[in-house]
Amino acid sequence: MERTRLTPRFGQAMSYALFLHGGQERKGSRAPYMAHLLGTAGTVLHFGGSEDEAIGGLLHDAAEDQGGRPILHAIRDEFGDRVAEIVEGCTDTFEDPKPPWWERKRAYVAELPAKPAHVLLVSAADKLDNSRAIVADLRSLSPASRDGYWARFSGERTGTLWYYAALLEAYRGARRHPYISGVVAAFAEAVASMKELAGSHGHLESGEIP
Image (tube, rainbow, N blue to C red; front, top):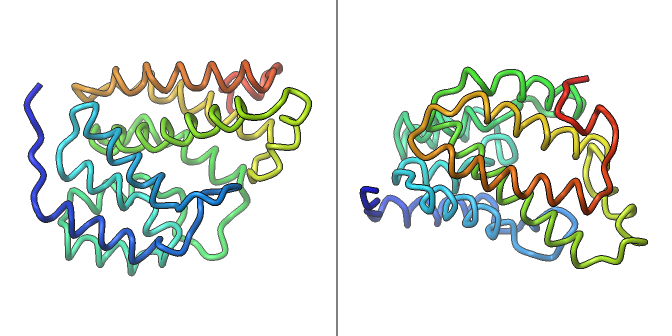
């Protein structure tokens, strides 16, 4: 595997991500949201991604959560077309207010197989970092208290489990990046652990799009 060399652009992207997201916390926790962005970028690099893909990992939520298309245009001007394409490809809506959760997630899953390889890698790294955080949270709770955990998510238990299973099926059908198999395999392990800890059953949790 060819070594990825990081340049000052990566540091600039970290500073920009901190500027945009520095006041945010990870959903349902006191952890800075930067932990997720750095985790996504680190996962991209771990699986052999390029500097542009790692920068995309740092900025993948910027347009969706911090200003829409004007932020996307600023990212394109500062970091180039490839990074902007990654950010756009990881964004499930530019609308404010956002459309209903189920509508957005069904559309995002349906569009995934057609996305370019560099977008798929960052998207899968994002979801891998999120799923590992969910698994860690569930493991920290007693079985009796896990049902209440899901209230922090817009899709609650049923929607969240369906979404991650559906994402996994979409990634499995779109392995067009030389390193995508590794991140998808890791994601599959995290999704399996999530479902086991949640005690999941039923067709909505199988990945079938309702």
